[in-house]
Length: 278
Image 1: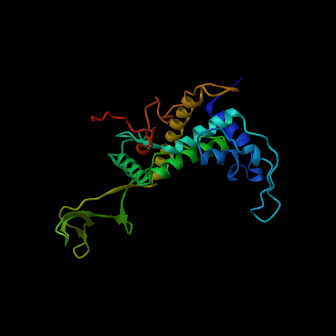
Image 2: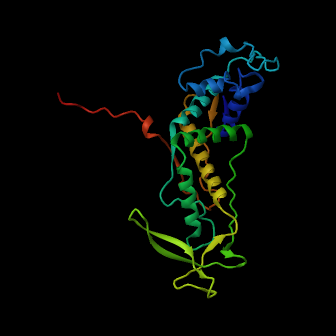
């Protein structure tokens, strides 16, 4: 048996085995081993042998003819089935998750940016988040590299307008629906050339860290997915032996800290049986 890491196993499966059946299109072809597994993530591929030598004439040309590639290795099928199963999962972000914990103190600005980025991510539908997990695992396997988790600390600067410090003030407004709202408006009086009473200044990052925060979120999703795949397929392999990874969830910190988790979507969890009195 060949000893491999989960990353090496994924790359082997998605680069060499699961494209089989897809001709020159490889994974992208609907009849590749991967696409058939993706379409029905249970059971062994039973129709591959029938389709392996069929000519694809859907494009109206002869460039993408099917060649006899053989069946994918059983271990690759196990890997593909497990990866396809990630489409039934979702992401759980722990309370207080701070992707920028290695940054110097920004008086709460970094934490606020992280909360905003997480809110932006969670606006996506569960199905879209699940598809993102699968795409992340497959994409990194094909490229043979990990997601970028770099996040250089951004400088803090005062918000300006026209090259001068901007002022803000909060006003309580009553809407026509009867509700009262607090609105932040311009706090500078152009007539007196002075800030109004209660006005304050605000600060911002010189470079928006949202992309870096989401990059670190992707990295932790990837690591969580690798750990889940390791646990699921370790005992299913017939030609490979897995060496379990000790990859850190937080390589930007000195110590490994807990991060995001991959969980079964509530809608896909088996319903609990309850006794009913007759």
